[in-house]
Length: 384
Image (tube, rainbow, N blue to C red; front, side, top):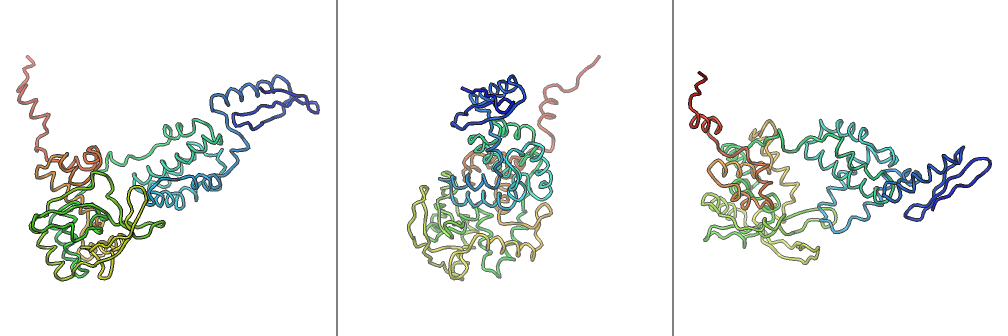
């Protein structure tokens, strides 16, 4: 229960919050002091009270505490979070007191970033900032409605609406494969383009998971790299990413030629399970650099160089490894593959992900369906 005491001719209102911390403030009149005590006691009961003293902590100081409490996350996820804070959030807000963070400040910051980052990256920045501020709310350092106000008042570009992915043509894929041949990975391009496998899945593919007789490829692991674990093997991205894919005859021939010229390399790498436990395993990698595993960043750079040599662009940008996955998806949909079948082929955990990303590649008649149906039903309308 709060109270008011007379101190040196003024009135000091005092109360304790739910944490047991005492707060006080001097007023000229007793009524003002009691009004302040009552309002803050009510705010403390509803969880809306914010300590002025606690809110003086800077975003950077609170981030150091918050980061230490992130447990149970995949190391790659931690790396992405750390990168967002290190490169974008802390340079902008690190020295700011928590109490100064408001929708206008965040909106101006995102507006400055919009020209440099893709919509999906801006969404990730906003998500990570809100996660930090949600923890600050729990710690009674910022107003309880701050995150709600940020999400309502700060405009964030959509990562999907208005952004339609373009796809490589088969001619461009062939040109990229030919440009990769000097680096011994022409078949690697075809592997991604003909199966839709992710980069990590391609780099983690071992010879024993390629069955030439049955014409099948089993996706059972991926190759990853992060600060905490280094280069390692891990389970596929989602449960549905663990799948068996067809091995088309042209791809089987290309892989056979590549393996005859550049045999698989046996490497020993730590393999982690979903719980973070690991053990060393020996795998014979299909795609390698001649002496060991091919780091994902190195393969991305290799493809970028090949795209420039072959002048392969997609929507004005140099083709990337991930564009090969989009090529596969667009080609399958154009040839009549059902979305749910494509979801399983790509290893998406949800059908909505497949539809949101690739629905504009689905075939349609030149004349919109609405025109066809209405013409058939109504014909000509006699207006008298």
